[in-house]
Image 1 (cartoon, one colour):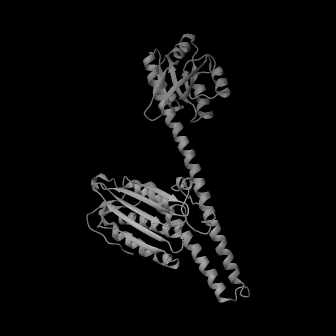
Image 2: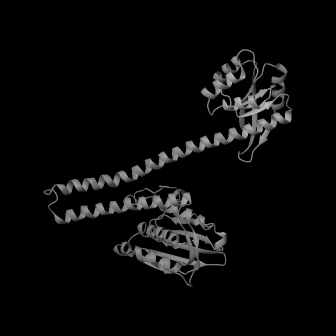
Image 3: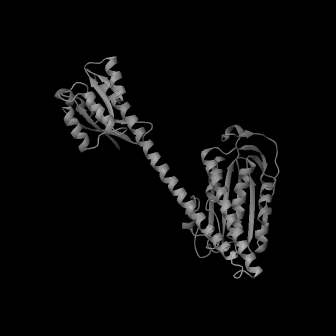
Amino acid sequence: METVRVLVVDDELGMRHGVERTLRGFHISLADVEGEIAFDVSLAATGEEALERLRAEPVDLLLLDHKLPGIQGLDVLDVVSKEYRGEVLTVMITAYASIETAISATKRGAYDFLAKPFTPAELKATVTKAARHLMLQRQARLLARDKHKLRYQLISVVAHELKSPLAAIEGYLQLLQDQRACADPATRTHMIERSLVRLDGMRKLIFDLLDLTQIESGQRPRTLVATDLGARAAFALEGAKPAAETRRISLILDVPTPVVFSADPAEMDIILNNLVSNAVKYNRDNGTVTVSIRDSATQVTIAVNDTGIGMTAEECARLFGEFVRIRNVKTKDILGSGLGLSILKRLATLYHGGVVVVSEPDVGTTFTVTLAKLPLTEKEPSCGTTSSLESTSPTA
């Protein structure tokens, strides 16, 4: 339960206690806030006492009488607006209600205005309005802090992921500068090849980050067309063939009947390329990668199976987080951005689908992606989306 701390400042004892009685036990529920909101009420008879309480303990909402002995209500409001900007919401209470008073109080930072005499219902309505504003402010501050924290974490992770390949490339280049140390052509060729591998990894990290941010922000242009998934899968397998051939890994495509449904071809390529490249990378020599695609009345299913190193149940549960890479003795030499499966899951969600993984250490892994078949009008496109029924074929 959220609590709004209220300080009632009024020189009339009956008014102070009347407000306290009205708000004691008063709870509200707001659509924008989970759970109920309660009110914790404290009292002050003068402006001086109010300022002492404000400095001694936190206050969210100030119900401040305009006419006070000693320091006047507007003077207290000036201090609150200057010293507690954005932290304390002030509602002015006065028996001398006028347009001029309301304008003056608003200019000095008052949130609202309540004229005496007021009913308990009027007080509750004003307090409810103020509480909603306070809760929205709290949520905005929390979101801002979370955004700052996430931005910091993202920059830290990206810096960490780029630091290692940059250091490796720098080391190779320094060695290449020493002609005596690199007189052997085979050694030079090896260093250049390793540098190119590291550069390719950095390039993939950058492209994956761009894909992820565009998908999450809804700014990635989408074109929904009748897409042949078998053809897209064949294209993905063709791209993985060089890496597979060097390790004698067999690539199998299992599509008994043509599977064509409304999708963005580039998104299907991202899904299939991520699944196939992972199946090759985490496979064993002389292994097999099988891509199976099935069609039904309501959805299409893409399953990619490998005979590789596999994972434990605990490792599977962590897979779809951002920058998550399974690190162990078997995977220590396998490069990757740790973003591919996170992107894949987000893309599946765009098609009202999902992805599950079944794996067994030293046996293999199967990723299964389901994508709902919906009319184009039911699939809400991102910004820049166009829809078409023209068939597509894979292009490089």
